[in-house]
Every structure is written in C-alpha cells, then in structure tokens.
Length: 326
Image (tube, rainbow, N blue to C red; front, side, top):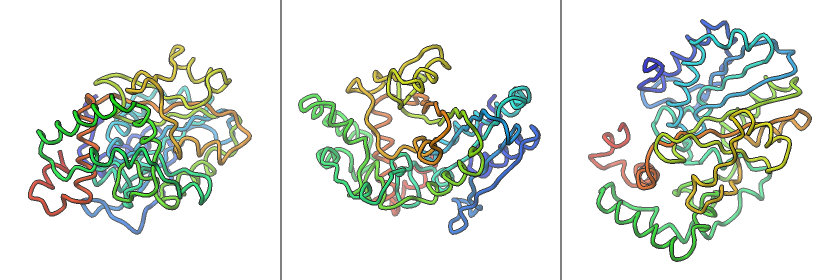
C-alpha cells in the first residue's frame, strides 16, 4: 500500500496516469499552462474515465481541492486503480476520477491556489458573493496571522485562541470558516473571481457527466477530525432523499458535527462539490466530502497559520524551505 504514496506532485501524477492506463481508463488532461510546479514541471489536472459514456449512472471522485491534501487522495486513487476492482464496477457505472484539481497548490505543498484562494470557498454563484465581509474572521485575525514559526509562541497563540472562543462562543469559529473575501493575505480566502480550477472543474462536469441521470460524488480531504478519524461531511439537508442516499453508502453515518468544536458543521459558502448541481440541474446527485483526521486541534491550527506565514511573511526566512517541504 505504501507504494501508492508519492513524494512529489510529478511522481503522484505519473503513478496515477500509469495506473489509469493499466486499468484501460481514458485519460483527459486539463493544463494550467501559465504556471509551473515547484520543480519546473507542467501543471495539469488529469481525469481518468472508466465505463460507457452512455451509462445512466455515474460517480465522480475528486482529489487535491486543497492542494497538499492531494497526496492522500492520489494514493487512494492509485490503490483503487491497481486493485482492479473497477473492472466489474465500470460495466454498469461510469467512473470519473479527478486527479489534482488544484495542481499548483499540490506541487508547491500548500493548501490554496496561486492566488491564495481556498478553492472550497471559491464556487460562488455571482459577483456579489465575492464582495462580503466576515467580521468573525476579523475578530480572530490576531490569533491567526502569527508572524513566526516558533512552536512555543504558536502554542501560546492557540491557547489564547481557544480561551477567546470559550469566552465568546465557538460559533465565531464556524462563522470564520465560512470564508472571507476581504483579506487576500488570510486563511479561507474566497477570492474575487472564479479561479482556474473553478472553470476547469465546471468543464470536467460538463465534459463527462452531462448525460448521467444519477451522480454520486466523493471529494477526498485531510485534516478535520481526530487523528485517524474518518469524517463524512454531507451537505444536503437532513431528511432529504440526497442526504439519505449518501448516509446509507457508509452504514447510515450522519453529518458529523462532533468533529467541530461548536458541535455543528459550518455553513460553508463556495464548496466545490456544490458546482455539480449548479452545472447539472436535472440528475439526482448525492455524495460527501470525506476527511481523514491527521492531527489534533493544535497541530491543525499551527499548520494553517504556518502555511499562511510561509506564503506572506516567511519567504526570505532561512527556515522557509525546511518548513515548506516538511
């Protein structure tokens, strides 16, 4: 199983393409031609398609929405392809595997796009949506915009952050996580317009899913949840047919608000998975964002703050390369 993991975007891409071709998948490449990767490599989102294009049922699996989280998603796709379990499944369902929808961030070992946009906040419906303040984000800036990589200061900052929310309410964190458009140097930045990956994902949907009547989706992520925990984030309303269908796939799991300190799932705005229904209004569509917990609260807090610091304050620091490649 370890041979499914990679040490770079280029290696992950090569493994995905090789495994896809061995599984007799059709490869479609969407290039981000105006940028290059950290090693000077070409940046692409590659899509492998198995099954009959005319099949009524389809599934789309997305990896790399948050760049560096693509290492896990890429390994999952590689392992699944090499197991050859898709040979039987593809006889009755179309399978669309999206490798690295955010290739620049994958290659550069960061979470956000080349414009610091959190892609999972960028799929907004109109220009007005890209002009909204998030006062809860501003309240937490003193804890998030830490200009240091010092672990002891980061830990003190995390404790102060938690103390503030214990006093004023954890709902502030949920509101902060929804996204913001007024701090281009901040976390969870929605951007000012659709990103390259936004346009590309919508094209992928229309290229490969437009004839399907029933669509399931999985969007692989890492971070949310306790270490090793699997969290299913289902964003359809509870009680809806779409929510019921998705929960049944994993043994009647629910949307796990317990993975968040507030006890409820944030009302994210601009989610990538919502674009499927935005583009295709007729099919039945169900699915989930699946998270693998990778660290405790402090570990995730420090990783997010450190990623932001490296992008905006730490480029000239002697420790930049060590932290970016860690």
